[in-house]
Length: 90
Image 1 (cartoon, rainbow, N blue to C red):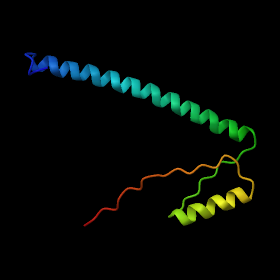
Image 2 (tube, rainbow, N blue to C red; image 1 turned 180 degrees about the vertical axis):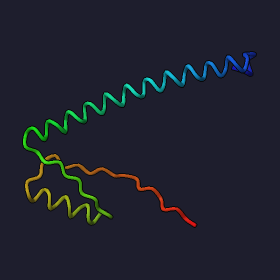
Image 3 (cartoon, rainbow, N blue to C red; image 1 turned 45 degrees about the vertical axis):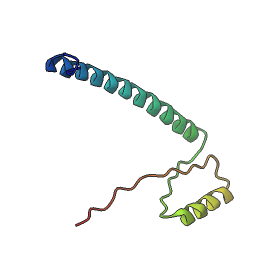
Image 4 (cartoon, rainbow, N blue to C red; image 1 turned 90 degrees about the vertical axis):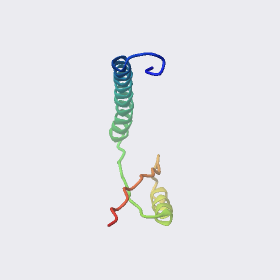
C-alpha cells in the first residue's frame, strides 16, 4: 500500500482492521469447535462412557495400549499425536 502511494498511517490502519477481523473470526471458530467437542465428550459421559488419556513414549507402547483397550471392549479409541516441546540446550 505504501509502495502504491498510500500513507504509512493508512497502511497501519488497514493492517489493524484486517488483523482485528481475523482475530474475531478465529475466536468465533475456536469457540464453535470447543462447544462441539465439549458436547461430544459430555454425551459420552452421559451414556456411561469413560474418558481415558494414556501417555506413551513410542509407537510400541502406543500399539500395546491400543491392544489392551480394544481387548477390554473399548470403543471410539483415538490416537492423538502431541508435539512435545524441545528441552532447552545449554
